[in-house]
Amino acid sequence: MYWDGIEQFSKCDHVVGIKISMLSRIDPKSWDINPIVIEAIHRTIKLFGVQRVAFASNAPVDAHNDDDDDASLSWPASRVLAAFDRITASAYTTTERSWLFADAAKRMYRCS
Image 1: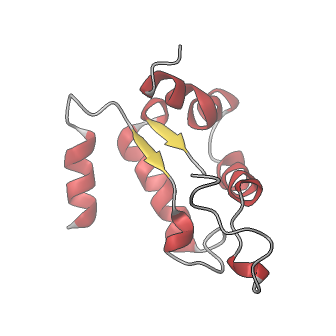
Image 2 (image 1 turned 180 degrees about the horizontal axis):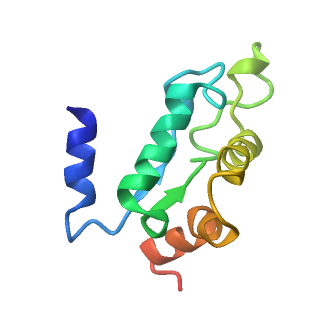
């Protein structure tokens, strides 16, 4: 049901894109290697296309820091960036990754 709704949402003419973020909420300790999270990333990209998906860290507002008692619960922007880089490295071309990491957000926020 969830993915059916996301698919319908992706087809709406007025939807300029979607931001992928807050993945640590799904699995605070190992979200960046969790197959469910990784599949959700790829599925979202497939539904919306690389030109309508922007990766986001939500840092510093939504980031635990390295001072947490349990370092595995930390998700600073550097960890988010490294995870997105690793997850997309072999699945997408350099041009597609440029859209995911910068160009889509620039377009969505009308920065270019």
